[in-house]
Each structure stands twice: as C-alpha cells, then as structure tokens.
Amino acid sequence: MKSRLKLLGLVAVPALLAAAVPTAYAAGTPQPHSTRAAITGDVLKGLNQNATHTGNVAAGKRISVAISLAPRNDKALDTFVAKVTNPRSSSYGHYLTKRQFAARFGRTDAEIKQLKDYLRAQGLTVGTVHSGNLLVDASGTAAQLEKAFGTKLSTWKDAATGRAFYANDTAPTLPTAIASLVSDVAGLNNRAQLHHQAPSTVTPHNGPGGGYTPAQLKGGYNVSGTYTGSGQKIALLEFDGFQQSNITKYDTNYSLGSPTPTVQKVDGGSGSLGDGQVEVGLDIEVLHAIAPKANVTVFEGPNSDAGEVDTYQAIVDSGIPTTSISWGAAESARTTSNINAVDAVFKAGAAEGLGFYAASGDDGSDDAGDGGTSVDYPASDPYVTGVGGTRLTVTSSNAWSKEVAWSGGGGGKSSVFKIPSWQTAVQKSAGGGYRQVPDVSAHANPSPGVSIYSQGSWSSVGGTSAAAPEWAAFAALYNQQAAAAGKANLGFANPALYTASGTGFHDVTSGSNGAYSAATGWDFTTGWGSYNAATLASKLLG
Image (cartoon, rainbow, N blue to C red; front, side, top):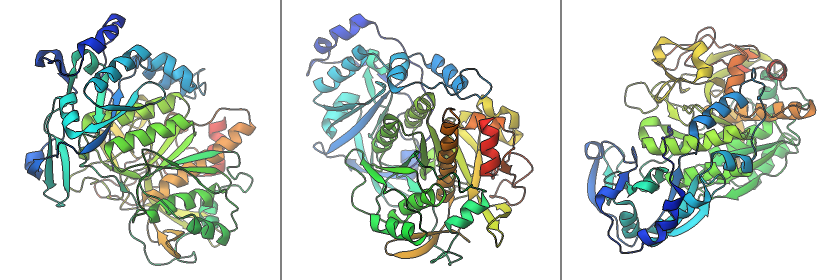
C-alpha cells in the first residue's frame, strides 16, 4: 500500500456552533446541499479510464473509515517542526510530548464532539479518538456511509490487474462547519494495496542460505561493537505477520541474543499469515543484525487506507522514536487527501521527536510502472527519510570496499510535495522545485542480498526493504550514543543529515536507476549515499 499527501488548510469553528450540533444533525433531518462542502481531493481519478464499473456496494456491507482532521495553527506547527529539527536552531531537540502537541495543535474537545455527534446521528459507530485529536475512527454499513458522506459507493474491476475493488463515485461531503475541519475520510475506497519493497529471493551468497551476514553489514557500515541498540526502541509498520520461530533461528545462528519482538495489532491486525511474511522477517532480522539489542515492536494493521492511517497513528501514539517502513506505492496510486492525512501523522511525529525511514521502491525511476518517472510514497514525504538502494561490496575482513547505485532503487522527484527548505541546498534542475528522493541509501541489491531465515529455510532477499531497516538500525545506535551523551534523540533526521553535507557518508558516484545516474554529492539514485556509522554519529553529535 502506498500514499503521499499534503495538508489542507482549516477554518476555525465558533464554540457556539458546537453546542447546537446535536439538534441540527438529528437523524432524519434533511441537510440541504448548500450547507455541505466537499473534502477536496478525496476521490480516485480516472476510474472510467482504467477500471470497469461493475455495480453498487451492498447496502449492508460494513466498512471502517478513519477521519483525519487538519491540525490547528498549522503554520505555527510548520514553524515549530522546522526549528526543533534544525541543528542550527536553539530549539533543536526540544520536542513536544503527546499532551503538549494536543494542546497546541490538536482540535478542541468541542470540535471532536461536533464531529462525533454528527457521525452518530447518521447511524455510524464512533471508535477511537486518537491522541492529538486529529484522527477519529468510525464504522457503519455502506448505506450509512453514503448518507453520512453524501456520496455513492460503487464496485469496480481494475483493467490492468483484474482486481475487484470499491470506491466512492464523488468526493465525500459534510456539513460545511465540519468539512472545514476534515482533511480526509480514509476507507471509502479500497483500490490501493500497499506492497512491500522487496524482490523475490535470489541465488545464495555468503550467509547460510545466501546474502550478507550481520558481520558483513556491520563491517561494511563501520558499526562499532560498543553500540548495540541496548535500551532503544524501533517500530516496524507491517501489513502481514511473521513466525517467531524463524526469528529465533536467525538470532541463534548468529548468536545475536536479541529481545523477542513485540506485536501490536491495529484495527484487528493484518489477518492470516500471507506471502508478505518473508519481507516482515527481513525487516526484523536486518534490525537484529545491526542493532541486536534494540527492542522491536511490530505494528500489524489491515492493508487498507484506513488501516494505514491508523497504524501510523498507533506508532506515533506509542512514542517509539524510530520507525522502519518497507510498504508503499506510487504517489499516483493514492488520493491527494489521503496523502495529506498520512503526511499529517508524520508531521506530528516530527514535532514529538520521532523519525521515519521509508524504502524508496524497487522499480527504479519509474515507480508507477507507466513508462515515465515517478516516486514512491511515503519515501517522498517531507517528514520522512527516503532510503534508496545500493550494491555494497565488502573486503575479506568485512570492511567497506565500494558501493554502486542499484538499478532498482527508487528515486526522482515528487509530483505532490514542493522541495522542503532543508533540501534546497542540493536542488537540481531535474527536480523542478519539487521534493527530491531519496535522501540516503544502503545495501539493497538482491545479488548479493541479505541472509534471512523465513518459512523454515534460509534464503537471500534484497530490495530497499532491506535498506530502510539498515538506516533505522543506525538511528537506534545513534540514539544510544546520544542518550549516553545527554543529548536528544535524532528524531526526524533529514535537516541534520543535509546539514552534514556529506560528512559521514559513503558517496556513491556510479550506477543508475533508469532515468538518473549517480554523481558526486547528492543525487536521485542514492541521495547522500550510505552511512559510515562511526563518523556520521560523531558529526551529528557535534
């Protein structure tokens, strides 16, 4: 599943209006169209061109939605995040607690009550109101959702894949006062299915079933044995599960002694174990390889728009400082408003000192697969560190030897987000003034891949799904050092990484990902390059 969003503006709602809501939205009371407003960008584009209409969603089908609200004082939030993540600012590292964030930027209790009263009046069941008062879960039948959001839900068949899905025919609408608060209603379509950025298993290399071992990964990226991630926490966003017996086998084989991962199910979890378990195992085992003593929490949610937003919010609610993300999709695969909703969660995380590392995709410069240039979301989000792919070569003593750009590593320019201020120093004409991806990179080439144990056997797996946890592991190692030095966690890392101006990186200057070639300094194939853990940590610690 993939998505990329921008935040919408908002209009303050007078407190008096909230008090009148229950009467105004009484069930059965006609709501004139003139009193409603559309949620801009919350409808799939080009349905009639690339899908076939097959009917209507059954009136009694139960559907869950996640309703995102735009932050209060959004411009002030932008300013705060810019300062708290800028190493040159006196506010650097002075992150907000969840309570402080809610007080400064969350919607008021009166506004949340206004929304809840309206939803209940339409027959919907209101679920969790998440921390920060910016996300509210609800559920109901298709008929109830159609009434509540003033749209029609139809069934479709994708012309390219043949997959059946449902979607709202028109943008959802809400009473004007409430619509001014809402930025997205996730769950009204289920077209997008996020995929894990990892290609199929490949020919064995150096591990028991192929691929690089923990010693080779740590040696290649100069990870000191002094730092193991002890006392640190890392989150994984997943839409499939794993078998602990496989993780135990991996840890035992390499004598890692890693803590058993914790599983947190969101919205009922990801369902029965599927083909994605190989990649979930990859994520966990790469973290164990580089930061073996870190505590890993696997957040398992449904592979849906609503499930995605809720799972990211659950991670932010947990306060875990570092998250690795290996699931995504091309920016064009998602609605604009849903990208905005996910982006808002990342922005809140940045304000609270949380860092997200996302795989940039395994389809080179053409993430959408349509013959053009496109990038993957959430790697393209301005509050996420996008991680591209390389092919790492190590010496017989496991030291870094050389690195080239992996042809499958995602990279290019966003079609959604303008270039953020911290990236303007490396702005390229090919970027056209938009966000440039990736920010950094690490080993991802499937030949050699990474040695993993899954489904009862050893294999070698590659992809930027290996690169993202390689960077998340570094963040955990850095946070361990920062804690010992009495300094703040790395949090949203990009402003600091760009301020480093290449110090602490292996600059990758050869190879391409299709439309773009590696070059000296930052480029569209590998960003700044891979990390030298010792020198980069020293630079960031100052």
